[in-house]
Length: 290
Image (cartoon, rainbow, N blue to C red; front, side):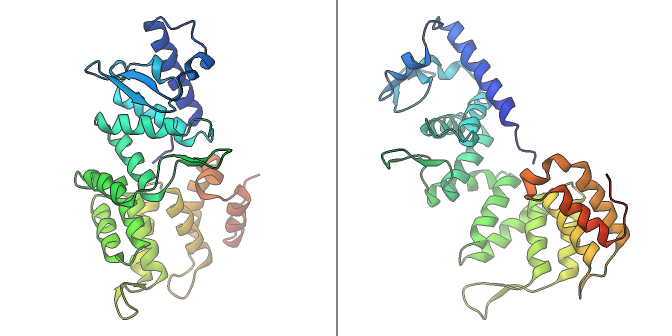
């Protein structure tokens, strides 16, 4: 899944805010004016009942029923990923609003934030704010999506349970995602099969045995859907070869070309540089682009 461009979300969010000001004749309110009531901001819900929310930037200028659930998610996503910790509760507020208004992306990001503890920050006085870690609530939200075959939720739940002693649950979620042709689930499960044993409650309980052939086939299926982590993994496997999978320069070249086609995303999504790809290509004797 392509990550939303933060700059696009920012300008989109800004447009919503400016439009709301115009509609409600708040053009004379500055940001400083809005923050005067920072401790207890009033907004209106669909029933025009006043709702009090603490520390929500701009909230007193926006009526909840005047924007769409998709827009609520966009604002929440911006605050969650902007790196600006001045108003961390804003992400929690807007993602919650998006979720409560039926936006699946809001539910997904809120569930992930609860489950993995993202979206929190500490102010100068050592106070923690933002989205608190709540494993039970996160699982509940993501399961509500998984029941609707939301593959992103299946992937998140699979990743979570693989980090617990209930690894068999993680495998079940990933397998369901694979059946739904999800590239992320294919990648995670393929990586497990390719690299070896996955044990359960005790060392004697083996959930997944090492099956490199099965693993590389799942990785290839994921790579063929242009999932970059899988593309890189497959390119590396075929450019090096090992005891289980033979080196195949032609296949390696195929996937290396896909990496070059996404060179702008290599650092942000994979944490690698174009030079890493060039070194891989040298191993198969391929021509390295200038």
